[in-house]
Length: 162
View 1 (cartoon, helix red, strand yellow):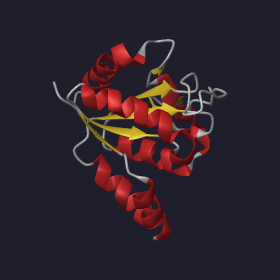
View 2 (cartoon, rainbow, N blue to C red; view 1 turned 30 degrees about the vertical axis):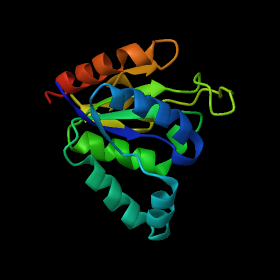
View 3 (cartoon, rainbow, N blue to C red; view 1 turned 180 degrees about the vertical axis):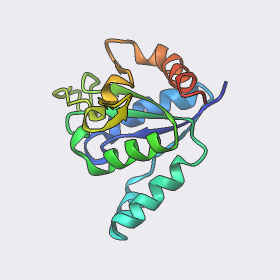
View 4 (tube, rainbow, N blue to C red; view 1 turned 45 degrees about the vertical axis):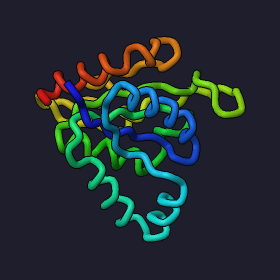
């Protein structure tokens, strides 16, 4: 089944790696949201936080799954947090993919980052539960993301009844 997927990532730090994953996903005849070019990013950023959040909300419309691409600083990025919060609120399936083992445009890998789902908690059966215990994470390189991303996304969608 074709899925419309929102990709969440740290733009300044991971856009090249994210582009590699997005291009892989697009070649599988799927549609992705959450990507923009540098000029569009600068234009929206100049309009302030509310404009960025409106853009994110618009990009999330019609998506069934959110994939958080986890780089070195992803868990610290406020807009990634906003995207996770909004995705959870709209009942999107979610998963994380560690991308630090991917080589960047200069051929370098990066240090692993923290799981951003660990920054968010919900009340479930009277106890506080971390989103990191609810949503799986994978490593793009070690878990063969190119071959498995479709399976991971479909599993997240089904888990969310989407």
